[in-house]
Length: 237
Image 1 (cartoon, rainbow, N blue to C red):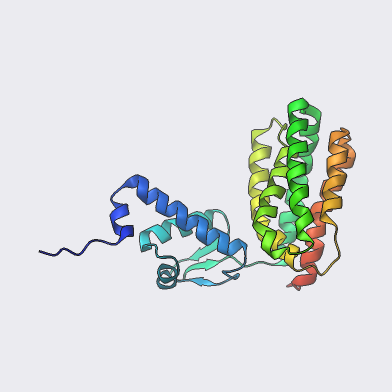
Image 2 (image 1 turned 135 degrees about the horizontal axis):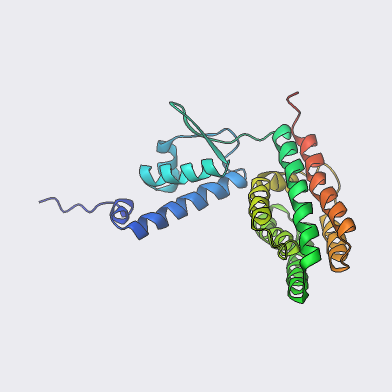
C-alpha cells in the first residue's frame, strides 16, 4: 500500500473552496509581480517556471493566468501559451485619453451629487494619501504598494457620489490598467513632479464644488504620467 501523501495543491483541489482559494492566491501573487515589474513585459509564462517559482499546480496556474488575460495583464496565443502583456507609449496614450474622459464625467457627477458623507470620504482618503506621500521623497520603491492603495482610495472617494454604475465600473477597469505605468513613473523620475501638490489642488477644488476646475486638474494630473512614460519608452511610430 502506497502511503505517500498527495502534495498540498493536489489535496486542496478536492475541495472547491480550497481550490478557489489557491486560484485567488496564484492570481494575486502573479498579478503583483507583473505590476511591480518583477515579471517584465513580454516574459514567457511557462508552467514549469511558474510551478517552480510559486508552488502552484498547473490547473490552478492556468485559471489564474486566464483571469489575468481578462484583466489585460497577460496575453495568450494558441500554441504559444501565456506571456506578460507588453507596455508601450501608444497603449498608455490610448488608455490615458479614455481614463481622462471617464474620470472627468464621473467626477463632475460626483461633485454635483456629493453630500456631507461624500466630503467626509474625500477628506479621510486625502489625509491617508498625504501621509504616504510624505514618505515617497525618501524611498518611493519601498512605498509603492501602500501609495498605490492610498492613491486608488483617494480617486475612488472623489467619484464615490457618482450614481452611474457603468461610469464607476469603467473607471475601475481603466484605473487598474494604468497601475503598471503609474508604478514605473513613480520610480523612474525623469521629470520633476510634485504629486502631493497635484492631489491637494484636486482636493481643494472638489471640496469647493468647483467641478470645472477639479475636472481640469484631474485631466492634467493623469496626463502628466503619460509625459513621464513618453520619456521612458520610445514611440513605435
